[in-house]
Length: 102
Image (tube, rainbow, N blue to C red; front, side, top):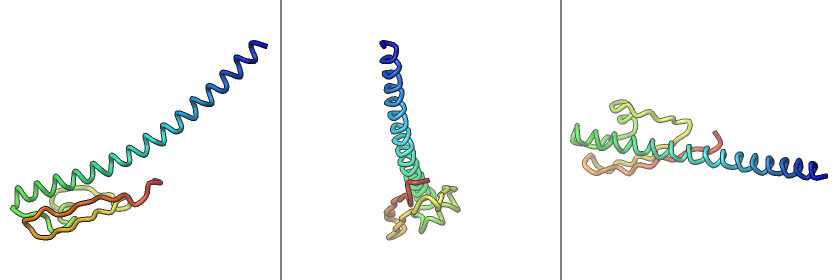
């Protein structure tokens, strides 16, 4: 009788631990995607500042950043909002993830 109780406890504990690992894995994947988005935005901003330091102007658009400064943007995952007002004013830059399901 005591042996059956131990087996049942072990099965329940295994189920609980498995559930926690599954939930934790989803959270890790979510935060990894969030971190990837933040890193891309930071890379774009560094390239923009570098352009200003070297060329004396901010880049006119994202295509210029990609071409001249080699920033890779996965356009299947991200939308880059880049609003340049003037060549001597820091542009507004936002990276938006298209979907969280990939």
